[in-house]
Length: 156
Image 1 (cartoon, rainbow, N blue to C red):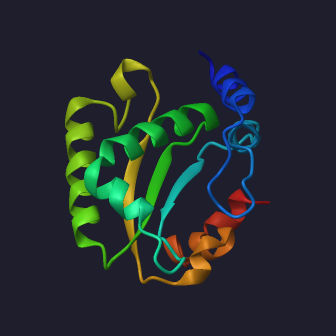
Image 2: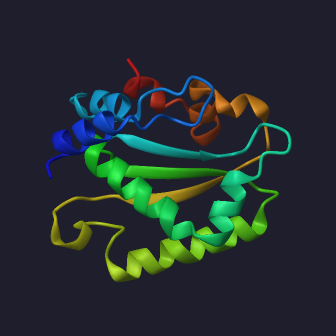
């Protein structure tokens, strides 16, 4: 499938973000794909700012490859070349397991340059956050990842 076909399929499936707005995922990916930028960034927000929310932590601890696979699909569909998983530093087991899964994927080929011979470059970095509730908001998480503000040029 082409990136456009992936976006259309996800839109037709009705997949929505898990945030409060429930924004349609296919529309978000297509919007990113349509941006004429050389570098696009994909962020998996596993910060869990809501009190008592442990879903992201549980997935990262039990099946981090599922997160990486989802990010690879999203990166392909949106044209992203760099991914970040934003996770609270107070979840060390989740971070350790994700770090190991990223290492394994780099060694096996799904992450890095020329992804499995497809000429697609995509890699993931873990960004440990300090547990700020505000990082559920788009510009706050971007500023936390890159306080120098490089993201501002991307969002114009």
